[in-house]
Length: 124
Image (cartoon, rainbow, N blue to C red; front, side, top):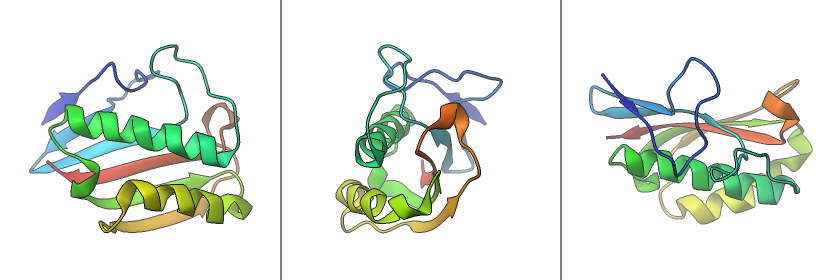
């Protein structure tokens, strides 16, 4: 098992890793729309937040030697399922023809009251 860490994504703010590489997979922790340079939440709607989240996910995967094209499973947590269509539109621009398995759920509350959090499992 190997811990993954990069300055191109927000630093873990608790007792967890940005990702773990194990047995040929990368298990990336959920990312929220934090600016990795400042550690601050970005302002904006679910479109803006989803873009930041997926950029953070991409940075973690690249640090692990993987990429979005290697993602096999995602879990999307939304604060409001009414944001699904907009999140889905942004999501599609990041994954294109690569269509990993996905679950999307509405959560009662997300860290720091963000609109979206996404975690992924990818091939290493």
